[in-house]
Image (cartoon, rainbow, N blue to C red; front, side):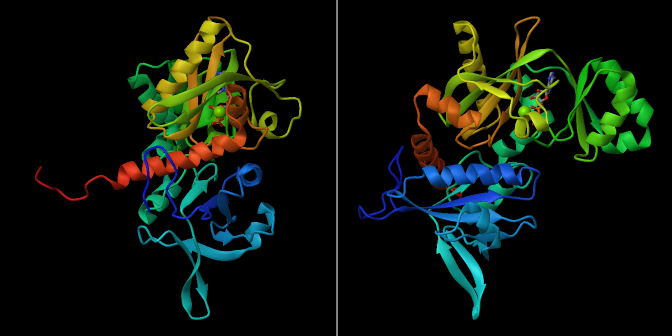
Length: 377
Ligand SMILES: Nc1ncnc2c1ncn2[C@@H]1O[C@H](COP(=O)(O)OP(=O)(O)O)[C@@H](O)[C@H]1O
Ligand SMILES: [Mg+2]
């Protein structure tokens, strides 16, 4: 297959469609969110261009292949398959009556698995070993965007604004609970936010406004990760910018989230109907420019590729922008902030999907043309 720069691979023959494996589900708390994203993507992928295979990662981590006539929700009951680890085979394999057999072939994978085992670099590692092009950030970019502590260090290193934080390790919390809480409190002060380092969807996050509440919050966060951040809390507006591309990375118009909750917690994200998404965000032109510029620099600092969503806290008192995080796999239903921001920037949902798939081939081509053995130049 030849892969012209900046385009989709030439498939030889006008009628040949690109075979896309839409991978969704997963073992995280965000299984349902992923399913909703996959349904939206499935509906929007142009059937004249793409032949889509639905692949659900079930609650046990097994891959299940759907069938074209069934909706994404039914895919979890499909035939068990796995991805061949033979580089370039691009094949799904299954156990048949006479041993392993090919269950399908793919040109590219569109992973839409949120959380651990999906956007933390582990799935990307598997796809990298299989040598198949895939949408989004690679192993390193995914891993550092997932780890709030490592991400903040890299952002700080790039001289980007991040709020002060202090790490707490689960083992020191178990050994000396009071002392550990005191150390975090004297380093950061109140109010502070307690966050498991590798989570999403606000799971395990607590706003702490009294010294007494810190230890229970740390203990709860320790249920989700062995590393916990205690971060300075501010009164802030929540501004988000959608990102697309590799080099250059492009930024959308900013959007704003407004919720009646104390902060943007799990219920505000997925349960409450009254959480508002303002697109575009009501900002001054120079604030808009500032947010977009910081967003691009943040994604680059975190080795992000393809897509990302930079989330900011805009300090209500000082007017400062703080980068809260960059999500390598933002929510992707038609109603989610990421596609809505692109829509408002002039890129409709189906065209956004085309672009993301194109970028997957770009990235793959750049990597596969690298030398793998030393050659005297
Ligand atoms: N330092 C902070 N100050 C004020 N609010 C915060 C702070 N950190 C997090 N929040 C609130 O908590 C929410 C979830 O935190 P975040 O770090 O984005 O975790 P997640 O990865 O689960 O989305 C944010 O959207 C925001 O509402
Ligand atoms: Mg967040």
